Image (cartoon, rainbow, N blue to C red; front, side, top):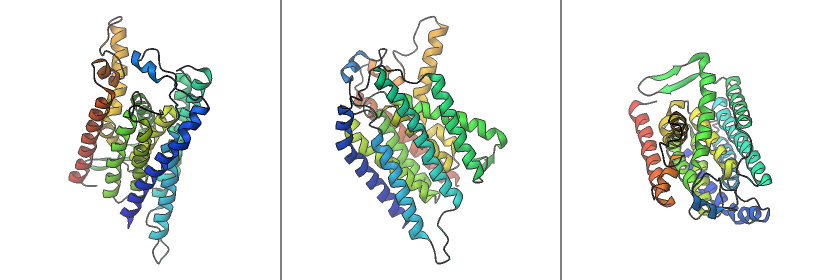
Length: 340
């Protein structure tokens, strides 16, 4: 019975996200919420100037509404004759606190996008403003989970649960903010962030299902379905961009799922593509400074390097999605082999 709600969540989120575009894209165009293209980006991206941004509201609305609805229905239909819910209070808290964290990051992204649109430039909030807000959200999430009795433990394959102790909280905050910004950096070409996150959502859905975390499985399914519906409007040539509104939300959502599963370490393989994008920027800047002007890549983040090498946007999306699928499958296989 639990698997049915996961399937329903994926299908419903896909439908809502895709159908929302019929109204949202014209609305964003009417409001002149167009993307201002970064000057340092590939020159041919200038043709995308004015494409509506903040399209991430499609999968944001779909994933939140569908997750809450399907989780509530799952709990209601799963209550036994003793009145006991199929999931604990802590498991439910992980879902709703996770949704709140993702929405809060989406709100930061919206503020950033709105400043960009209002000032007609690609720079929104300052880096310092973003980091302060992002760490505040991470701290609020971790504190909430602490209040609900979540332990400072993480799952290590072939070992089991390992208690990190008090250092769990600062490490987790840095990890959350890092992944959120890494997902944000991945949003640079049509369909890339949505496609990679779709595959991440699919494998997280299976990981949650295998560990009998049905609520989190529903949450992951809603993410995958929402991203797929959004790709109807975002795949090359994009009719809308997700903006920081969408990309920061996706980063928070992914963290919520893996923290909810107590598999924080799996942010590394599951987030391989995002992390590679982030480190390509770090390496580029560091190398540039150390060599007084030389570049390690033709352009960063690394998806732009492949663009400069002559790869089409579609080819980059396909290759990066395959890489994400491989690492997602490897993560699932590791869990199956090691046991949870």
